[in-house]
Image (cartoon, rainbow, N blue to C red; front, side, top):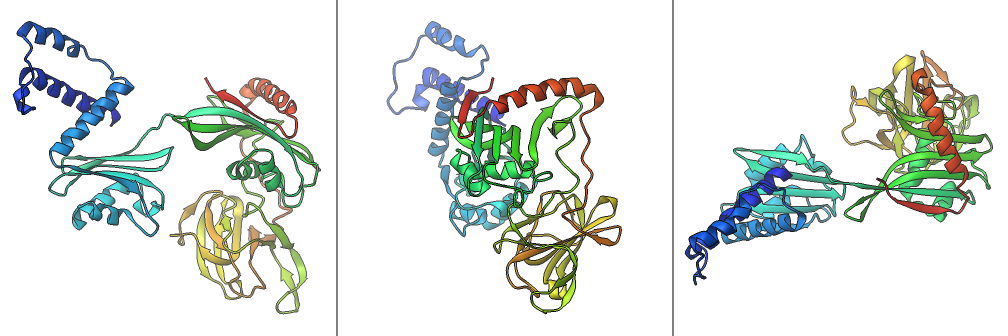
Length: 441
């Protein structure tokens, strides 16, 4: 669509230039001097060769096109979505009829769901004098931009491919206090902390295994759009050195495989996450005979209680189909998922469910399915998480889950070379170091 817009702007600029030189009386009230025929022909020769407009030329054409729209009575409106405001209200305030507004937001849905619009998102509208919406652009972040143009009786809607610059950053630190605080002290942002924890969540229990003096290292990407920070990209290589030794994860991609792998070339990604919560505290373990904290009687506790603040997101530990979403007596609000290989997981005492979650839905590993609460028979906010294998309850903390596919045999040599390069680079990072490597070629 950008090429189409540039071509249109280029064509308009050509027409205006021609009129300005050949028929200036159509554009100005006072007519400037005319070119002679030879002079006009020579001046227009430069327009005969098709060229790709540069940035300055494209901007100039856009401004000219915008000025022409203004002269024809078009209204361009730009702003930010306010709290409690939706796109329908923005469109109506810009003069778009309610029926046309509803039709347009419906046309957006296959590419961008208007219900996901949030305060602070930027928008720009072009409305014709008759109140018809002609152009629409919407920016949720520097990396997420949408654009729509009227096309006949419908709309052409797309997500804009934003040019992104990736800069490598190396970071290392030592645990002192919580892992989260230690990462921030080393120069990381909260998103990197969560990505690091998620990367190692199949092999390291950061809530039980983290000790003062543990070391972490990572090389990751910072994203920029026109020199504006746009968040983090991939973690390229990472290590965690703790009580269980050194755990390494390397991002590796070739024609046959893509993903994160360990020192042995095994997939870091297991079929199940170790925990449905990112950060938590275990308040009660799996037991065949536990004194119930409310009923004060001994009864089995066939799951693990994870203490966490109310509202903490709860994630599906593996790809699944939703078996049930609803109230289950003493368990309160509960979600039950069915997984491959005979597994079933249950999430109990939720405060609420993920929006739109329903029985029969398919969910992906890591997808939010609900939020920590204290519904049912509960002493406080926590998640009671249970795992059933082939109809029998098992201890979630002791169950061994299947790993993903390893590096193919044909790729082992190339992977070992990549692993050696990255582990050497990680080993050279001293705790307390944060180095930006500059733009990637």
